[in-house]
Every structure is written in C-alpha cells, then in structure tokens.
Image 1 (cartoon, protein in one colour):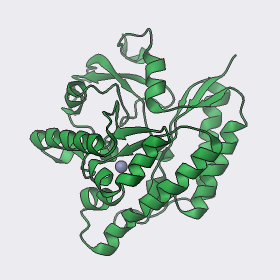
Image 2 (cartoon, protein in one colour):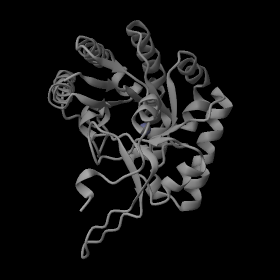
Image 3 (tube, helix red, strand yellow):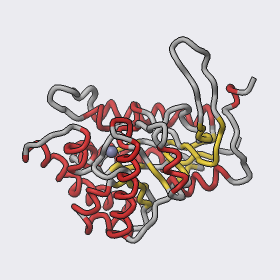
Image 4 (tube, protein in one colour):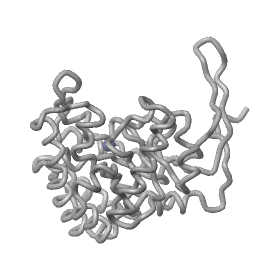
Length: 285
Ligand SMILES: [Zn+2]
C-alpha cells in the first residue's frame, strides 16, 4: 500500500502567558520561565530551516505583543500561526462574554503584529467550552485542534453532543469545522516540566523520543495513512538536551519514504476536499 503519512510539528508559543493565565503565577521568577520561550523559538526555527520543513505555531495574543519580532520571524519563515487565546485562559473557566472578548483580543494581536487572520485555533489547556465552536465559525476558522476523539485521523467537529451521568449519550450534529486531534502523551509539557504543587516531570527526553517513534511507527507501518501531530512548547523543547530529541525525531521521520511535513491548515484543506460533514464511522447506528 502506498504510504500517505504527514507530520505536523506544532509549537505552542505560550511564553509568559502560560504562567500568568493558566497557573496564576505572580512572582517575577515564576513568570520568567516563559521568557525563555523566545530563545526556544529561535532554536526551533534554526532546526526547521536546516531541515527545510514547515511547522505550525499557536500564539496567544499576549505573547505576540510581548515578542513581536519573534512572531514576525515565524511568519516570515513561512510557518503557520494559529490562535491560542489572549493570556492562555482556559475557555471553560471564563464567562461566555469573556471568551468572546478573548477571541477578539487574540485576533487583534495577531493582526497588529503580523497582519494575519488565522485559520486554525487551539484552545489553551485543550479545553473547549460549549460556545467555542460558535466563535470559531463567526471568525472564519477552518480547523481546530483541541480534542482527542481520534489519533491520526481528522474528523468533523459536532454541535449538540448530549450527555449526563444518568442518561444515554447522544451524538450531536457534525459541522463544517475540521478537528485535527491532539494527545497528552505527545505533549512535551506534562512529560518534562516541573511545576511546584501540580506537575512532576514524568519521563526523560530519550523516553519521549522512543514514544514519539513508536507512536509514529504505528501510524506509518500499521495504518499507512494519516497525520501525526506532536505538541511542543518552545520553552520546554527549546532546552538543549530536548532539542537533540526534536532533531533526532525529524531525522527519523525523514528516513521514512513517503512522509511529508505539513502545516495544519494545508492538511485540513487536503483532508476536507470532497468530504461533507459526517459522524465518526462507529457513531452511525
Ligand atoms: Zn498553550
């Protein structure tokens, strides 16, 4: 069977917004962890340039204003930039009105700093609210990447899924928004980062590399078709001993015939061509 496998390297350039918005840190030392993200981006960009491959960066508005030159360099290098909130707020923890404001603030910042209107969205903390999809439609997004209902295959987002602890599950209506799914085991942050009181590093970079390779091998050897989407953070993967793992993974993928590196938008557009919204195969009775 001919292989049709793509890899979308995604980097969430959260910078200080992660520590301010998600972790609620207030001390200069804690917030300074995010500042390293800009240094990480420079290293990643060099690696991507040397490998001649595109990638997708999700950037909160707060980060775009903090590091305009870095975000402009990402755009000038031809990488995709997606929406990632304002100051890395979890949409589920704010009011519907505030989520609408956050969407507008993020769009405004990306327009001000790089003059783009993003086509992709990734929710901070991968936690969409019941109204997130509506906001994505209103603002012309083509795909989103915050859910986990598949691994290597995109699928159509749905509105109106219904559930309760006492009643039956009901699938909602599939809509014209592509989901490119994510996975926590392909995310460098929970694997590597120590956060006092909430997260311990759980594996070493070499173990992460083995996991990336094994997961990729399953897609490549057993499925033969689909997209592989690791999620990395410049402030995490940008450390020297982890950059080596990124470089080794890129080399590994490049050694496999028939694999392409892609941006998320390019893959979403290719995937949706000639398709109409439908439920997952196993959801149809
Ligand atoms: Zn993030």
